[in-house]
Length: 244
Image (cartoon, rainbow, N blue to C red; front, side):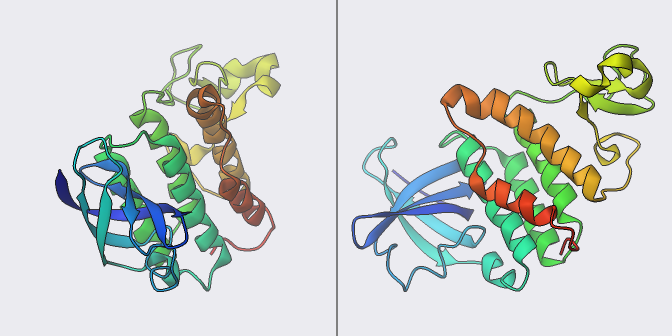
């Protein structure tokens, strides 16, 4: 059993004194674990940072074994973001979320491509926070829990969509919300078909929206919670400084 693929580091945990178990997000083999010999040492540490690109060869005696990785370095995305705490926190948060949410060894090429786009946006100092919210929406969709944000669940209209039902995941217009407004999740305009700005309040609403459904549908049934790296990111984004 062996394969070759391109991937991004999601997480690494020590195994014994020298080795480590690496979790990669690969295009053709999904989130896939493997043993890295010497992966717990200082020599491998710069390579095994979340977000870094690697070219991997995985080998095992049987397909369901842990197997071992042989790695060659690609783009060092993590190192390029060391001068920006917020961008580095964004990278750490999305890596932790993908590692927690995605099932092992199940390809998700759309999420792989979306993650690659986010890495490029982070490197270019583009609007990465809004892109991360959209990627979290795609996680829900790819795992079978897609949100219906195209039309109002009450009227069927497509205009003035401002809320989402926390139970059904369907959009609700401002007019239809009425007295139930305080029970609904706010829908930021940048997630609607008409588009809109992604200011600090909009981003907070977006992360609250996706976090609610990821926790409800994906993590809570497994007895898990949203990763602490995501909460650290939200704290940084809410600090009032510019998102960069």
